[in-house]
Length: 162
Image 1 (cartoon, rainbow, N blue to C red):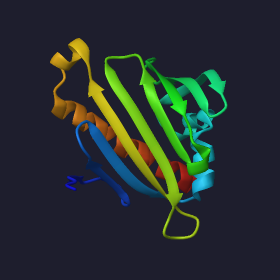
Image 2 (cartoon, one colour):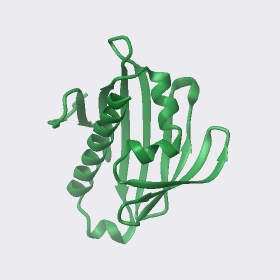
Image 3 (cartoon, one colour):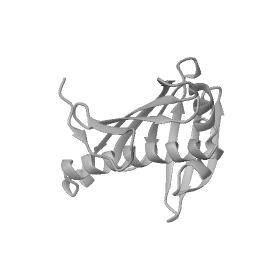
């Protein structure tokens, strides 16, 4: 198994490529896995977890499955379809619409030290259709890596404040 590690600006955040169109990342956060999982599946908390989310609109929910629209600073929005698995403390989602196929899985595991959690992210993104003519694979890879790094770093910051 070959993994190309990418340097990060924050301690305890590792980003690496795993197969075609997949970026993975690991980080340690200052809370237990159950608390972390419950917090990230409370979509209204994303307003304080992630710096560019201004609104979270629940479009539909049925048990552990939900469709949520996240509105960003610039007025753009992402519609995400979640299929969460509380028994394994795993959040899975896909983006609905757009020119890219985007799917992610975020799992929360016990950390090595008490009161910590290891967060593992698996992020798939591939540009489809006409947009693929204008966006290189290297650009998509860079954007995936930035997204995973930013999300993990923001989760660390959120739980460090708690």
